[in-house]
Image (cartoon, rainbow, N blue to C red; front, side, top):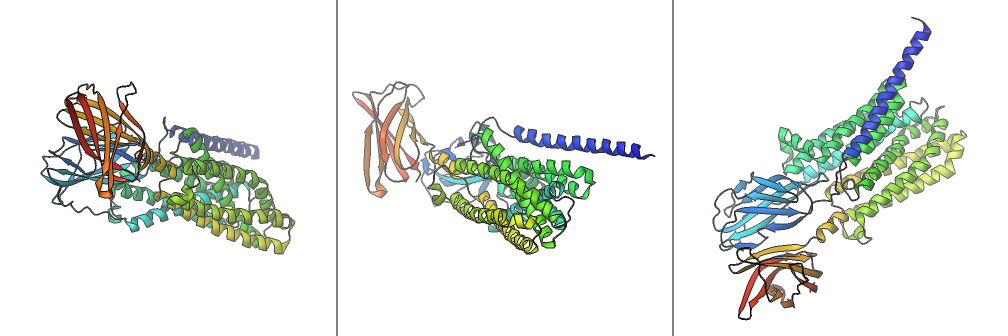
Length: 545
């Protein structure tokens, strides 16, 4: 076998590997685009129930309905009877944003609890419950509501491990392939970070299933837990992350000719994995947020992944340290610019108003992250403009100082990972604002008349009310006058009476109405049917804070 033949075969293999990596890179980008839904979703919020929370019914309802701010997938639906007996509700239908649930059996008198747990489009589970009574209210059945801190801690830890694998492992593999110039310092650390990511990704999938179903850690081995986790949008994140971690590992331990294409495809996989699920990727507008998440993730992996290999190369004063530093310092400025721009865009979309930075848990975590980033950027700027030139020139003491400074950067990066993992448990202000803007609605049904009332927005403050008036058998009712009466005697608030107007679209409206306090109000609608007949119908309605 002559040398020319061997060289030709090596070139053929190199081209094949290059095409394979390019195909994987293109596949990641296409997959990220395919995961973009046709409409923008937010964190799901319950906006209407039938029966209403706290309602007292004359007889058992034929069905229950839950209406959310976006389409959801039910995970666990349970009805708790007055004696505390739970009944699993397995017969339901999905219609756009409403879940209609069949009543399992004839229900007796007393207070019942309908408990629900659904998965929203961003992959995060949402749960809650409502009370209703048949006949007369009774003592509500005991429904334990507690936060499983062991599960939350495990979810948080799994996220941190996943970030270490993606950013320090796959990002470090990219640094070795494209920046290190054959240096070996920090290689063991990067190789060790990738199994951390593999463990974190796999564990997070099962923990996602536990959280979705509201199950304890002891149920982790059950197949239904893993099927549920895989069925959420977070399942795509895990699958893509596993591919990216595998590509990063192949670039480190495989032939040198395959290192660069595999490392590049792995870096793209980091961005695609993060863009596949999560609060930011599910925000509106999708055409902007998913690419921003992709760029933000790739930028973090490039920067964070290079820190440990570069710091150890400078500490050991290897021959490759100065070229490594030169390449990194030349590329990091545009990378940080893109990283910061993407982060600012995502923060503006998620937070929306400056007050949300203080008023919400999500905003307060963002402030902590921003504080760490200011420290990190300041330290990086000092390293870039004060130390890099001397370190590239071979100044031994400056290289040691820069190595120590990079070690501090690494600690800040790990702290940022921990803060970012905490966002898993906090809906963004964007989602809270959407929920707050949803109307409070109630259906009032009596023998002679009925009405569908919506108060928008459904929280205390300036609102507008819209009413559709019908006969008791759902026929048209041409009322002469309609008056809306709101009262809350337990807060000492006298009835608020407002005459409704008819805008011409078949509804009755009351504008410029102010509801002073949140809570359970009694709404009454006085309908003047004729000069001699007045029909009054009333029901409770919940006004949010």
